[in-house]
Image (cartoon, rainbow, N blue to C red; front, side):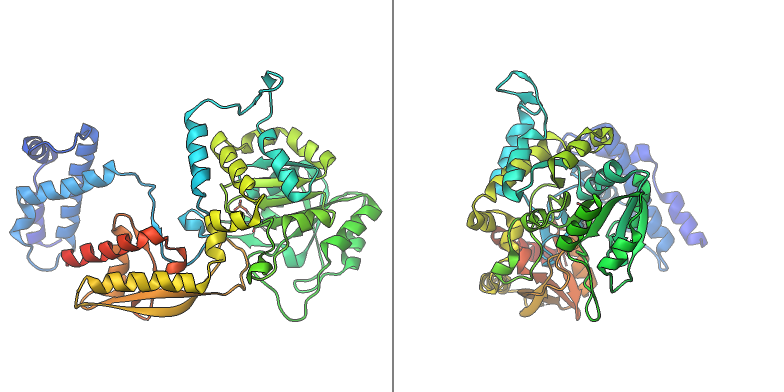
Length: 471
Ligand SMILES: *Cc1c(COP(=O)(O)O)cnc(C)c1O
């Protein structure tokens, strides 16, 4: 620290001085005092960092009362707003885990609002007038859609896998192919989850090839489960071999050992009908004879965060009775959202249009192109010479650790602003209200219109207008 910086730091007023300024200003929004005090501290902190970071002399206006109030107001405004807020997803990643994965269909969100703000029959049997089970609210429709005998739901699929393993194989052995010991983002690793569940992992085969004889050779008196994990977030090509679920079920039947399949991102719809790559559906997996199938509620299913466990009645019964279940149980909002989402699947064409995740995944490139051109027009209409916008062909991804090889042709709008770096533009877009999340490529700020909703297009245009006005 040089002497000038020391002198400047001494000139910074105390918290009380700024608090007085705040109280004397024309009252705007009612702000609780602790929030104001925090805001003042943050404003003074910002000035302090500025002084310490500055190489040259600082402008005197930095210490003016109006500047102090301005910084305080900014900090207070930020503190009064919600930390968790809606954003515009212009990344083109449909099931974006960092941006909330799946959007609930409108009717589903309304149902959640009603159930969560009123009393409900969450655990009450309206027919008999006695205590009921919360899971019975979705078990029927889950069995109807999947063809399974029984079903239940927990907080997320990681919980579903853990609970199933803990129930079926604690203290026993579980056989898994080395090609399926996957890691899902956010430190969910099959071997680690297995260890925590108390089940003993028995790895068989090699990374690229596992045969029936590998599984059979590993079966012992201690074997409680044969587990197949869908390699949902990566793909193996070349000299590979694995054992189909059907064959594994036959092996399990021969030795009276249960078979479990962790689907990860499950769905009832065969996406290959819509031009996407083939993924095993939940019904196919149940029909292949798995005793337990686990999958996420908010990946390709497009519903709320949940882990669905479907399968044979005796197996699911045991899982339902596991006391750990209580620690993983879903709340009424999840339950309401899941039931309403599942109802939409009764009519496939309705599901495709009403469930945002499915709509965006199957969106024809023509529709995306129209949206991109609309955004382009609105940006050009702003008449800002420094702003250059262009149409770009690219591809979006499914995300959520599903269909890693799927390329979804898409249209993007790329923006370059003279005198503003792509990084600065990206930051300004992220700090806007609502934030617009895109990506940087070749010094352009790129927005993929697949995941941008129609009504968000004017919002994006006015975000650019505001950013330019502040420049
Ligand atoms: C995503 C995934 C999980 C974890 O599911 P969450 O819903 O994120 O808890 C488990 N297994 C597989 C194969 C997955 O793809």
